[in-house]
View 1 (tube, protein in one colour):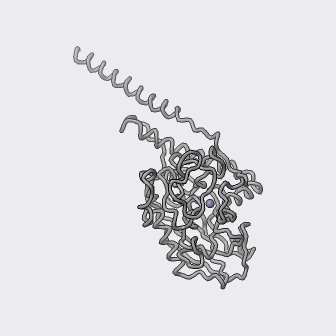
View 2 (cartoon, protein in one colour):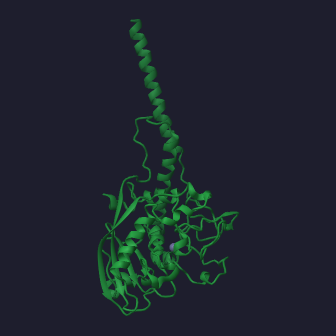
View 3 (spheres, helix red, strand yellow):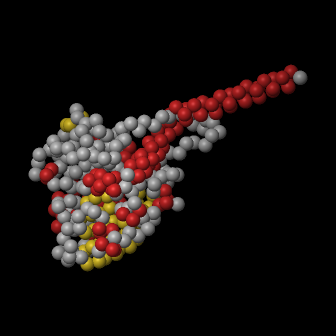
Length: 352
Ligand SMILES: [Zn+2]
């Protein structure tokens, strides 16, 4: 009998302990509040603090194209808000799982950024101006550069300053060439209204954007290197656009002829914002481990370049520096990109 009573009490204690454990986890889960108060989609043209010759041209038109798309489709803002909330929730979950006790509790762990293999098949759609040829060598070199940059294999990454060295990420994303579509075009300025993405407007239609990254290569004009569409946009226009001289290893592109426009634009396609947050010091890029800044950097800045009382990460792929002067993504940017491939993520179909 004594033995029975002892067992009973022991079981009761275990039961209560178990219950408390579950409650602990539940309350911990509930305690993760996702603050969305700083979320923004529209950006303004702010006078640039940098006044070099380079700064006069818009290198990347992604945010301006987004403004236009938001005007044409007001529901886009809501879709981007939901994607952002999903992103922040999974990153917060990762933080809480890391802090929690290992193996505690029966509830399944909350979803975190995707950790599996990611392979992105690429379709290159070329609207070729004969004066700006895009060769198979350009295409092959571009795929190789994307693979270098998204697998921490850029030879210049060793020069990342000590301050940022521990933040360098291996995004571990592989790009494979899945197809090339070519169409000759004498148009010297396709602009940024997505005409190159529609056969009806002289362009080339996208190949299933739920399974392929579509890259359009054409003469954009206006000194623009490229632009991308963020997750949440219309499927028919999902992908990135790169000016023909800036595609792959290309002597015609000069300081922008080493394939980093595609790295930058694919960063946007994977939901990365510009590293300075497209605003002044307090406007963020939604990444915790990137320093705040008040504008893009151009050329090949010396370290440290101080803005907003900290050194800018001018070597980040999401700044506007020369191709050879950008050579890192951060761990925070990597988490952000990888939430897209987790359950409920906008690019989940690429890993299923
Ligand atoms: Zn950009």
